[in-house]
Image (cartoon, rainbow, N blue to C red; front, side, top):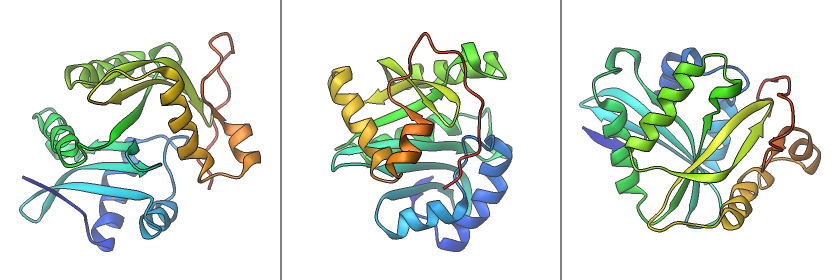
Length: 197
């Protein structure tokens, strides 16, 4: 299998076939936002190809040079539970090996499906993710922060780069209202709202 960029038509197809059924509205960017970010050079929508078939997607939101956020990792429903997710992640990490890659994974304590959230965190831990010392909240969803890097990084450095990714895209008002890096651990869960760029 090969990791490569899709065509615009393939991107639209996997967005509708794989991402829309797999992510709640509070977590899913509109397709037009992803397309625009890709055109502007702020997005890498990697797809794992098995011949002409797309087995999964690994979308990266770019920050400053050398920093990225794993925006979506999704395996096609017909390929799940077959090791495709680990292969996809491995190929992405090899392709982007010069960068620090941040990730946000739903916190089990506030997740609609705590068991699924724990499984996701376990998957990332088995695939070499490091845990940061802070959580985030985006559009009301509570996340644990993870990252891949060649060395351990301070929370201060991680938060600075994590904030930049959102601040570079959102207005100051939208950032202040919907993005919390770090999330106040004493705060009650917020109401989730759709990702509404």
